[in-house]
Length: 443
Image 1 (cartoon, rainbow, N blue to C red):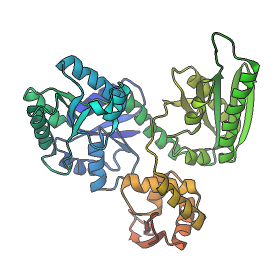
Image 2 (image 1 turned 180 degrees about the vertical axis):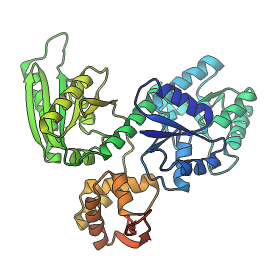
Image 3 (image 1 turned 45 degrees about the horizontal axis):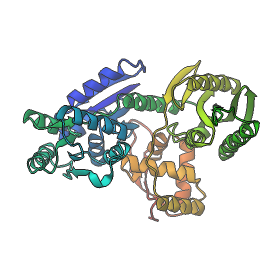
Image 4 (image 1 turned 30 degrees about the horizontal axis):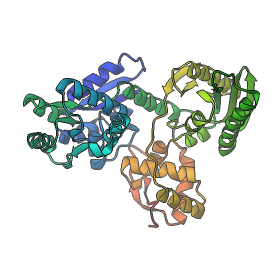
């Protein structure tokens, strides 16, 4: 797999250098720009050359997405609240200042306030001044720098946090107290792993067997006392309820095994599980099980195979690896025990209930499954499109083309989609339909 790493030279080189030590069997293609405005032409020139793109931050990602359609899977780095905590400690150590007064220029990131909360600093004592300049302004980095300098000079802030290399260079050269945002080093590895996994899964048979093996370590201690049998029974009951409910969502079979360790297996297919997990990005059980009373550790393996027996062996192997890992996670195992993982659940921005409610009503009106509507809506939003061919939609949603055509027919008959033209194919063949889709209102 080839992954294009898009960003400024220093950041791209740093990320690639770190990733090359991870042995993910991925070829990294640096796509380096000096000015953000040059990034569009560079990315466009690499479409078809690389399998997917990895952006070094939200600014290049959102800039590119607004300017063009990205016809392949993408991921981008973000700075989480824990990384901000590290930066606040760095500022305190290097600049010996009151870190509660700061200027920042991060695009679409609310984690700095969460970092102060993690440090148990009351919000009423924190003063965060955020630059609000348009990333499409050619002088965006320079205006950010002017914003920081003015507020430092006026005593409104004691140091600066920036997410832009050029802004950092300007402030550093002029001697201002500035910290350059550095997301955790583990994040790119996890995200590239996800891209590689999506590439592998897209090539596999949708009817292939899939097994989820779930190992749960449980027990409680009260003043040194061993867990009572009643407590064990209650904990096992809670675990079983969650797992059986999840299996019911998948219309899947469940097997329970308890020989010292508590292990469940859920038997389903690759296509169903891919739909449920949004392309193996988010496993609901890994959110629900660790929060139960008495659950100490959860390790999950997802196994794929041409036969159920092969999928089960792979799932158990992945489950064992996950159980021995330091935190709750899951591994995916396929093709003679090739492994993807560990995949650690991260917080995912959820659509608000109003939008989910709208999709629910559309699902009821069109008889299209809510899970499929959520996938289509997320893809249209991620790639910034409302006109697309069925083939492109099938590839981005990781669904079979014949299934996508049936979904479009249902949406079309209910007024949420319409054919507006045709797109010529490369070489011979009939032109493909261009379909406009609007899941907010009828067209």
